[in-house]
Amino acid sequence: MKAERRAHYWPADALHLFGRADGPFYVELANQKILRRLRSLRSGCQGYEKYLNQYPATLCAPLDLLYVFRRAACTLDEELLQDYLFSYGWREVNWGAWLAALAPSKRYEEHLQKRRQTHPHGSAVIDLAIASCTWRDAPHELGEQWALLCEIRDLVAQLPHVSSPLRVAPTIEEETALSAEMEALRAAYKSGGELEARAAMQQKHLSYYLRGHIE
Image (cartoon, rainbow, N blue to C red; front, side, top):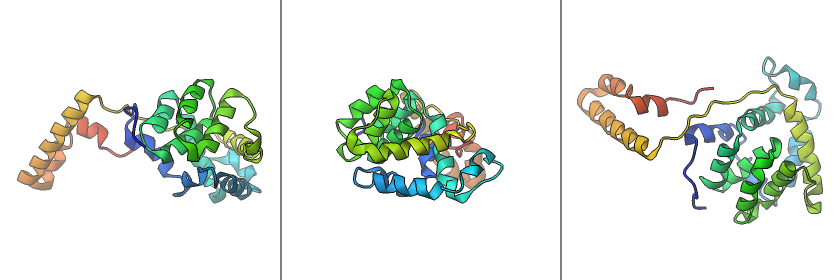
């Protein structure tokens, strides 16, 4: 899938949000797998709902995915959704649609409708997201998936609001400056080793964009 849009947010931050989910989760949002995955997700939470309002003081392993969903859904905005739908590949499309289903907004409908036309293998999760964003029931053939989504969304909503900071991606001019700083870093390491390299890493764009993700 070819990217249609320059990402608004720094990719390391945007992709960090779903990097914490189970490795195959985005794969299991495909049309032929989503029902089984939602059944498994819902059943895996049964009996542990009483711990939801104790987060983050008390962590419960069966709820780990819900914690990931809550942080990502609280962070989602229109720009981030468009990044997921149009700036990356199919797995990010699945993830973005899933987050839109968990944290719906009418503003998301247009973007989801547009991506659905070119994402046939993930049309189910997009249809669930569109139904959520338009306050309508999902198509009849997705009845069980819709019911499970609604239950999962209600569970996620019980968790405290928590989001992640996102850095805005560099402009073309800033990318040029970042590349120049990278070259200076390589030259510093080559001429003076680690000590000079550490000093070179304090340059404006390197120090901002290459630091680790900050919660």
